[in-house]
Image (cartoon, rainbow, N blue to C red; front, side):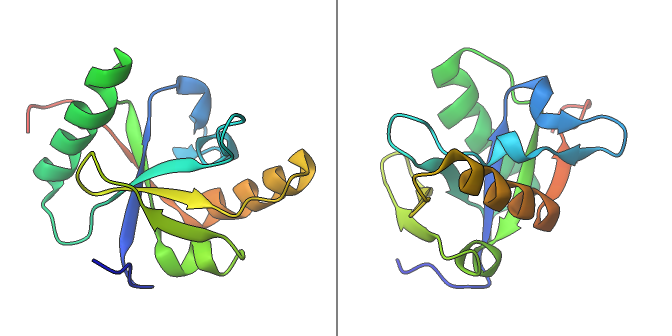
Length: 130
């Protein structure tokens, strides 16, 4: 299924140091690429319910890493594409994709991650059962 510019992607957050408590936003670290493969893992969450979104994070991220989901940063595909990055579907798991095309220089990666974090909407994990 092709990725549309208006599609929403969710980056699940497992580390508290990826969240800015002062204003409840995602920090750039949430979007930085994995140093080994220079990809950022995201999930395609347009068209599914909030409950299904959190369940996807629990099943495909939290359970596999042995850490609870603390929140998620949602961003539109168009915001990623505007930074000259790409989004490549990468299943399994279902709905998984990778943000690719990161520059080699860490300083440039950080600048892009700062811009992505500014474009993203952060959602803390609900404390009540879904």
